[in-house]
Image 1 (cartoon, rainbow, N blue to C red):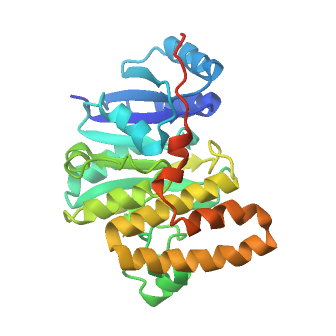
Image 2: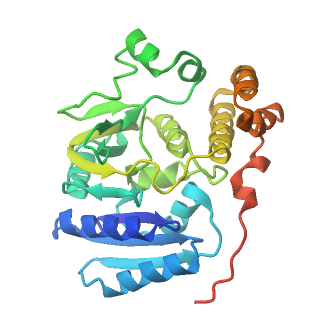
Length: 310
């Protein structure tokens, strides 16, 4: 068994993946026993070949494996492909558009070793301009979506600690950002891992909500730091915004019930009705909300299987 199994997804962004792997090798203590699992999530042939060529040249003691899916399975399912090959005591899910600035894996392992109430933790994130990015966040809820995060933080700072504060000591939050999530494998397995019904977005909210039900908390560990090229692997578009709302409403229904689902759905329908009048590009989003944002309209169901010819 390894100390840590690191799982990274590549989707047509091989240069980010290569740089991420390089930073892991550079900053991770050789005393750690690590297994690196890279899941190519249905990339184009050229992206996969470039990544494979690089991985074949790596000469390190740690195990590194590249596995390929012939369909884009999304964030949760892509990571679950990697989980099936993982044997580590801990699981680290790291976005490929990240660069480590410190020995994050050692810091996070040390924290989890001494804090049995922690089910997941994450390092402090910064963007490429060294500006702070939130690591801890508040669960998706009616209050957060309608009133906003800042209002909740002012209303109850203990329950809703500030997201954009530079902490010097470990800080508990409701969940940690999906760009870098570090789990105890037993806890991750106990709650069933990532919900593969979700194609993109809110996977971290969902799994941390389930961890909270077994009294496991989420923490920021600030002495571990990394750079996140936020959104580099996913271009912004109305399609992505639609996906985000589908996932949000799915998670609300799953964890808060039908009443909360319909209240939020109605709020979003009214909001995007008026937004669509001003910006007609939002009509597809408004139409999806009129249909109650079913999972059948997710990008997951629009992926095509590509023959693996290499």
